[in-house]
Image 1: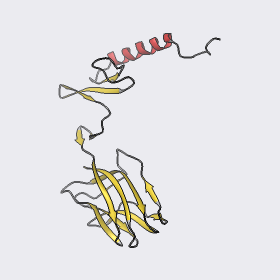
Image 2: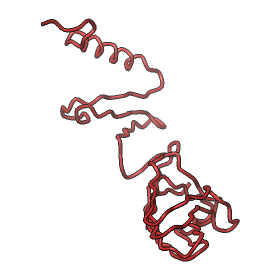
Image 3: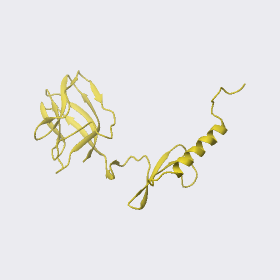
Image 4: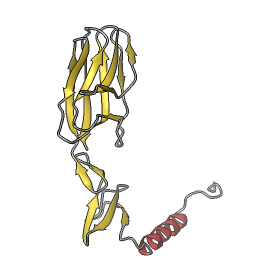
Length: 176
């Protein structure tokens, strides 16, 4: 039985590796992309690392879980529990002077029917529209490194409930 036309073969793989090496060798911006093969000094097989030069100093960035980057500034993700049961605004994350609270991911579950929205504290500025929950209803936002929403600079992050209903959850955020 023969392989279908265009099927991957070791000859095709060698050609692809040679092409990748040629592209990397001809870069002019000092950035390299390294595909790990699991050998000593390289990322694990299939893991990609980006190696660049910043101010003359080589740096390597792997897929990390302890920081994300805003340009070249490292931002440490922080975590907060969501626990509210009073009608109106409840502060979830306290204000940080001169910084915005950017929410990267969040989830909420409501004990009974209630409407929920996120607000910046002082103004108060609505950061989202209303989310309508039935009893035991919930939502989980997707992780978004750009942020799902963010507060006005220097303001706390509030959850606002339409009624006195127990609501719980969690969120991941950075300050920018």
